Amino acid sequence: MLLILHRAAAFSYVVLALLVLAQCSKPLKQFDELTASEVGINFRNDIRETNQTNIMTYEYTYNGAGIAAGDINNDGLADLYFSGNAVSNKLYLNKGDWKFQDITDSSNTAGRPDWKTGVTMVDVNGDGWLDIYVCYSGNAPGEGYNLPVVKDYQPRANQLFINNGCRPGGTPTFTEAAKESGLDALGTFSTQAYFLDYDLDGDLDMFLLNHANMFYSAFFNTSRLRNLRHPYFGNKLFRNDSPPDQLAEARSKLAFTEVSANSGIHGSGLNFGLSAAITDINNDRWPDIYVTNDYEEQDFCYINNRDGTFKEVSHTIFNHLSKFGMGSDIGDINNDGFMDLLVLDMLPEDNKRQKLLKGPDEYDRYALAVDSGYHHQYMRNTLQLNRGFANDSLPRYSEIGQLSGISNTDWSWSPFIVDLDNDGLKDIFITNGFLRDFSNLDFMKYTTTVYDEARASNRPVDYLNVIQGLPQTRITDYVFKNEDGIQFRDVTASWGLTRQSVSNGAAYADFDNDGDVDIVTNNLNDAPSILKNNS
Image (cartoon, rainbow, N blue to C red; front, side, top):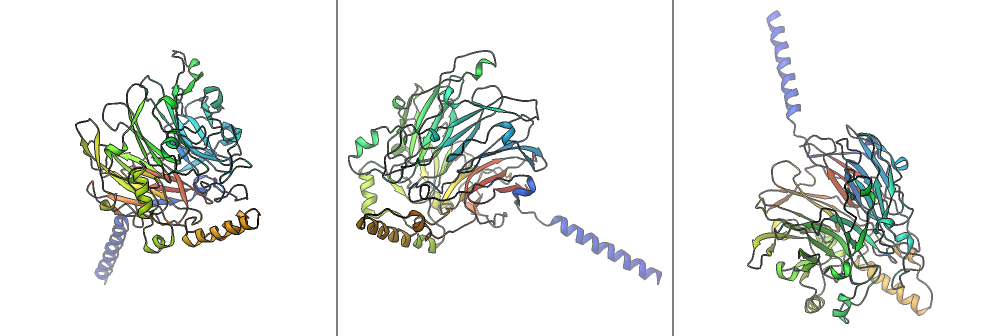
């Protein structure tokens, strides 16, 4: 009897050990989503639509806002700054173990109560502390669809928060210095700022991505229109002319000069810039710039001439482009040493939404755009594979988005080309969503009727009433695993991305310093998504 009990006990231990082993060997999801509240983040990018600010009067109302990640207090942990369209910006210190502390008020970084868009963390003055640049946009009272732009509108002045430093691990304060530095870009409709040393003189210059708030006829007097610089819609280039110095105190005396007109950077009223990507495209060790464009105007690829100017080469090196170029990123997807390019668009994945929403241009309009010099453009994500250099020392690209399986991700915003599972191949992450289905074909027909009726009766359009009929669709972000350097597999669900949202800006960093890349997204009318990587 005793022997039987011993055997029964031994069997129980074996079963228990097997259960524990099975539990331990159960594979983790690639990502766990942490709630904003559990990590100490109480930011929400909520917008309230009014007759002044809505999708009918300002086309980019639903484009969302940005987010930046960087170590602002030099303690070895990546901190977070959220930009809010109509709410205060928020700055959070990373306290470790996925806990964040709101230091917005004490650091003086909330920004103004105006329409804010992109944000950039960068050490502008080279003192070893990350600074923060915030872009502003949005309509002034009296502006809107086909209405004149208010000149030098002060609420559209960008801000530069200079980091005053602190003890390592302490709480820094910031001083706003955009205007005195020459970087406020007064009145511009700004999307995002990018800092680069384009003249290789040892300090950072700035490329400012802007957009229009109205539409010009893209096929009337095209050449003149495309070459006429618009002071508020066109992209801008600022050269850092700060005096050389040796003392840290003097480095705070920033002086930037706008050099757009003579730099070769396009800046017409057709400009609807949504992103830029900066890298050395032609391997001459000088930074080049790729710029995406919404609507009729094409994307631009600027090669650095190494003399303070750029040459646009998109027609030479690309066979075709995305039509409504949105987010972009550059990275080497097949580890061949050449930089490849990803540009997002707005083609839905499923057949229903492809039929429900506005699709590509009709052939006649497509052909007219090509004949007018806007290059070949197609409404889908494009993945440009760098095939190496031609005799003119410029690379040539083959577009493989459909072949790779990443061409249809709906209304997409921020892409990352980054190794998410630490297998040595760079994967692709994409945020997407649009608060209301503005391009719904039924809605577009309905608005045409509303405009005609209002015009016939000589009365204003009730925009708020019109947009109430717009349906809302929330979808998941996308993540694609790089299988072999060419083929990508959609692993969105299996990697744990199941939340449906409207995600716009995004940032990645190793927030917990465990050796893998985590992701945070800025969502519209919702709390941020916080994705902890389990690699």
